[in-house]
Image (cartoon, rainbow, N blue to C red; front, side):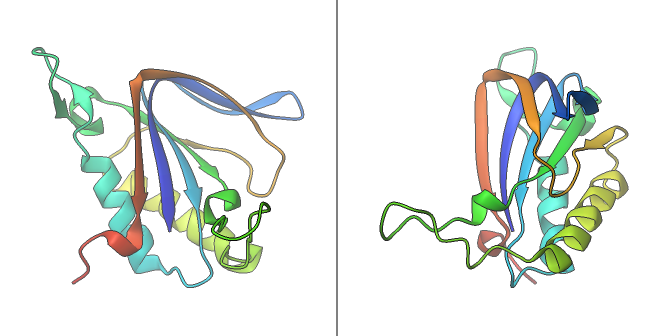
Length: 152
């Protein structure tokens, strides 16, 4: 499971011109589910993101987490994160999870963010053509892969 995390001052997602999810200060999470991902990896990733210290403290050091700032998250499903661009000029999406695999894991990840103490968790519409608007704060952008996190 891959995540691109952006620290934002605000973010919202529209589907057919209607806002489906919106947050103020917090994290925009683009989430890509691969065919071999599972709930354990989703849980690891959610816990890591909920406690990631990437918000500035009073000394302008990145020492604060979502919990510390009462931050929100907007989670957007994004299968293109699973694209393999090593060969040719067109991404290969063979490792992207099918909707039958990806959607339940996406929803599970959203639930785990809430269970990790994030009070406001918004989301997009799985599989929809979505338009995102955000103000990246910093900019701070982090890329995480669940397969690179310590597993027990």
